[in-house]
Image 1 (tube, rainbow, N blue to C red):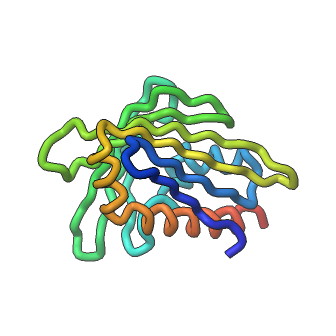
Image 2 (image 1 turned 30 degrees about the horizontal axis):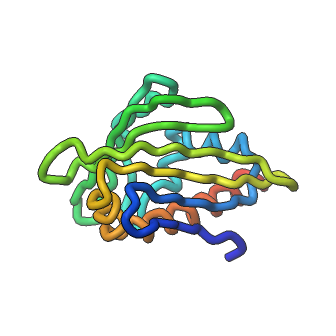
Length: 162
């Protein structure tokens, strides 16, 4: 694979960084993060399907996504969208609804940088409530989900750019 997803989670720090380059123009990468009909084609672990309960992708909006296994088990995520500045940045919260208590929310800032030859660099900074929350996210297998999603996104871009 040409581009690799890189996840950096320094020990003892409440944040992590995800970086990835894509063979697609910045506007298209940004669009793939904001349009429901594109999101459902790439976001989530490959062996699950995703349903969007709602997505109001604008400054002041919100979202709720549900990942479903083949056996019908559901994993839900929600958040508030603080800023959408096309095609440069999205700032939103992220909360997994399956924890015993609410409030384990992270703040994600996704930036989309244009690179030469119609390529894009995505950088996501996620800041967590605590180091324990960040470590719990890393231990949950989130890396597999992120890598799967980015691979699916590559395939979507290949299809859309033909």
